[in-house]
Length: 422
Ligand SMILES: O=C(O)[C@H](O)COP(=O)(O)O
Ligand SMILES: [Mg+2]
Image (cartoon, rainbow, N blue to C red; front, side, top):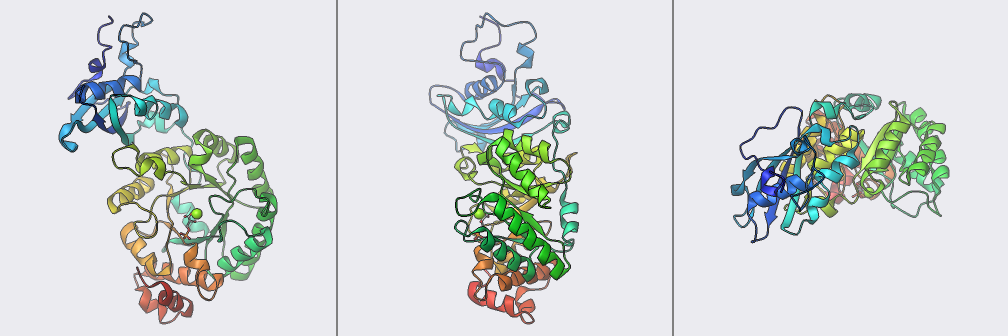
């Protein structure tokens, strides 16, 4: 039997991660028949160099040292029944530079299916700077995005064209135009709008970018459009070409359904002048349970490394779940200095003008705040809905209450009458 390849041989409790190691924090619950250190060691082994049989005849000198190490185990962090939190340190050479798929096949791969592991959650990942530098990171950064639309002292505001499916390209463009002229900075496609029989991608992009130019002329403001190019890799590139040929400067990708490999490809393809709006549709399938899956914080870290400029990251208020502490931590991470450009967090889902102030109070104004129903459901239409959102964003930026601002804005007053301030 090769010395030290048993699962517990991967445990070095009290060890210290080296500066150039990648460190993961896992919540772990195991079956009765094993101990916490055995289960943690199994996770470290299977996610690095090991397997169930410790006596591999193929081991060479030096490979054992490449194995991950459990450097910390905290069984008080669980509910006291076969669970706890383990920190595992991974030598950098286990990872292909610049590849989220390869990293995830290691630290979020087979380990989720080990039979002795009842539940497993990748809570956090800390990347060493050598690995961070191997990724493209965002092209623009928060400062550039805010200054493009002259929203340095307030949140950027936008809408998602609704109904999310069903409008024709000319109708889509008209709704977008109304939103921009009303005062919105951003109009985006919805996550399940792609190249549809009733709304072809090329026609939609051409018409909507034309509407954007008209709105820019009319308002004297720069506007942004995020067309959803989500498709297979090659098709996604063709759609990005259509956007650029029609004068667009941003694309939107459903990052989880399209996949990390496709996201790398599109970041590389569009280069350093084009923004990528990242929608996280599907994330809750594996981020939502607190004791299983992969945390949204970890997803946010992968997305930023891959080069997502805007990321849906929770809003605390509104229709989507996401606790305050968790969402604040994600926002702080996206805005922090990590040696690559920053990603602007996007608050979206069930928002309306009456809650923009709450979003800013909780999450700050370096944010894109979006509303679909909360714009197009305005009793006086999309233009008034857009105006009400803009007024709400401006008042939040100035620290003025939305009620006070509504005294001089009919659009905002009507919105508050309909939706209130919660
Ligand atoms: O994808 C999103 O974030 C939603 O389209 C938001 O829509 P809503 O503002 O109508 O909830
Ligand atoms: Mg949506």
